[in-house]
Length: 349
Image (cartoon, rainbow, N blue to C red; front, side, top):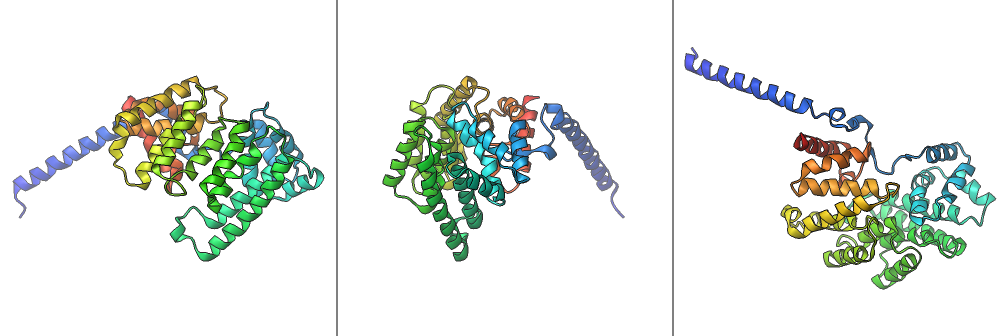
């Protein structure tokens, strides 16, 4: 027979558990996504995966249907801002990597169109990386590696034509070479020559700097020292609002992730200074800057790791339905991103 005191003890534990669960429900109920001014988790998409501009969506839908002309008109626009023009190519290059009928028709009817040549190069680069996958080199099969290098060589040849056709001031024909250079393991001397072509035409090209940082990472062809040196040099030369300060946050993340630096680095004085500089840069940026959402993601992550999660809430609101920052590199981006948003919402309550 069970002792009465044991029964009482169990009842007390059950009552306490019930009170705790009820309190937890009340605590989290007020911080679900809509209540915190955030979009529901089910509506989240990775940054850049879907055009946010109605004209871009219409042009992409037309391309899917085989009509290349709206895409040509959309990609030729951009008010001379090469970073905007490059960013606009992303969904079209992604589409052409799996469905390029519309692109080949465009190239057939306008063989000297430099934008079409750039999209073709970008599509081949994407196709090559799809073959390779994002796995570590040790996990890539021989067949995958051979296919990767074969298609990447095709992309390089396409890039030479894009360069030949490009207007004198267009850096994007060289920017599309950056992932080719990384995949083919170009020497640092050859890579610096490529970089000189880009910055001579557009010294603060956002996407180019993000791509180049990867080359200088230890996991590819650089080191922590070279990676930070590249970020520091770019930031020192950039005007306020360029959003290149976000490079430093990306560099610290790579350092923590790759060489197993202690996560306490996120609480250091140097990281805090980099984070505050990125916040000031974001405040000075043009609201139309296409780096707003990606940079907001890296800053939001930094604020959480720096012990300031409440400050990240407005950044999550600003990102809307787009998942940005390091969360895009996780196996389930929506889950980890939503968990970070919840932490920020609870801290801000």
